[in-house]
Image 1 (cartoon, rainbow, N blue to C red):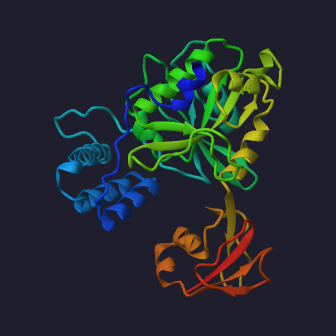
Image 2: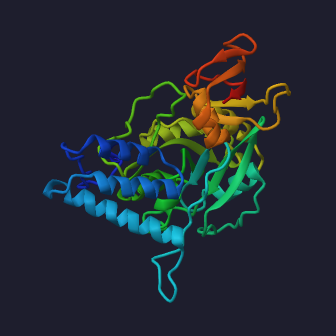
Image 3: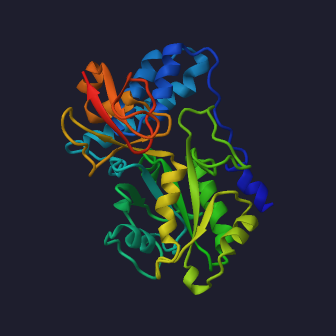
Length: 357
């Protein structure tokens, strides 16, 4: 029964909306841009484009209403409270920084805040009672010469989830699902958490882009507003019962197939695995830039994903450079030094790129 509950990944009786079959190519393009967008203003513009291009007929009425509702919500978050008026709640969207944004999720008293503090050096409030985290708290996890942004979020339980967390999770590239490996209640807490998230169209899955495919749930493309996040199960508080196989046993009991590690926020054991995991699982590629006639800037690389191109790097440097880009010269493992390439040439980790307009 537990396995069936988790494999469904949503409450019984909840049916996801299907995409209308007669939407236009312009609408599909806008929807795809919305799925990829991370910044709130970019997502708002994509929603407006979806509203402009969606066919207006009875078959799309529900989808139109959903788009309008999300436009209203994002507009309020970006504009702030109205003068003399009230809002449903404050904006808690954290601007993504670093190589990727990763959200920390978990039930009460799992040790998320202690873990976040240990990994990032943040001064998160830590206490032996639940719900000490009330706001999203960002911090930076260093790994070699890059950083991952970790966002500590309030706990999620069967009884309660902060309503603003839906918007806060949108920019995330993945999640750390933190549990107390010694708490027998986590057997009930984890499926309750996942069902609570699923009610809000947020689904955790095991398919990280840089890892071999695992058996389990697959991200769905049926609902444009469904958020699918790859998750790493972090079995915390291993110092209380140092059994490295505990995480695997828990996964079997829970019916999960997430990649998993066992750690202790108290002693630091196992924490060194998180940075390398994220780098590998997200297929991070570091690219260093240089100006003609000068050495490469080796202190702060730009980060893209495996398969991204010279043009993707140029967009990160400056949109005008991307607009006027003619070619690039690259120093790296897959090319000879200073090889001239076009804008669509894929970059590799460690490449030095010289952009020419």
